[in-house]
Length: 195
Image 1 (tube, rainbow, N blue to C red):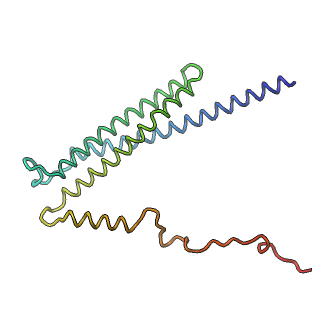
Image 2 (tube, rainbow, N blue to C red):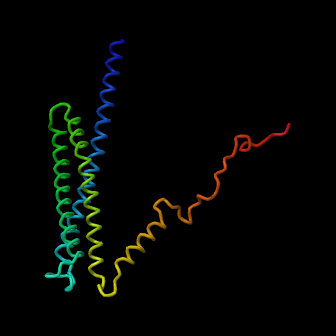
Image 3 (tube, rainbow, N blue to C red):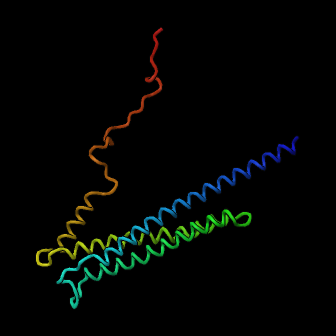
């Protein structure tokens, strides 16, 4: 009887460990699928920007303008990083599923180790691609400004002042954070009975 109970306990623990590994694998698979979708969108945006954006005549060669250089550099690097990230994410998702289903015993643990080892690289690359895409969009806005009337120094100063005056964790006026949180005691919450 004791041996049967022990065997039942060991089997339950193994099943719980398998369920936990499956949940961890689903966690990584969902993250990689999301990163692959974001990378595909940013690859398309960068490609359309490089091929479709019209450069003003005053910024075209032989003039070397920093706006044009920044736009093409950031867009091309963002497109290359996003394309690499897309290929890496798709490769990991497809092969992890194949290894999990057709692999040797303990293949789920091996899949999780591979996915967790590559996750830091994929996360850094998608963050860098987003930053470069935003920089290329900034360069497009600077290219479209009239160079005779635009004042870059004043625009940068105003942007810094506006950003500094609105910190990201500032409460909105509609939030009710200024009201003190009063906690009712247990004696006041229950009615008092007079004897």
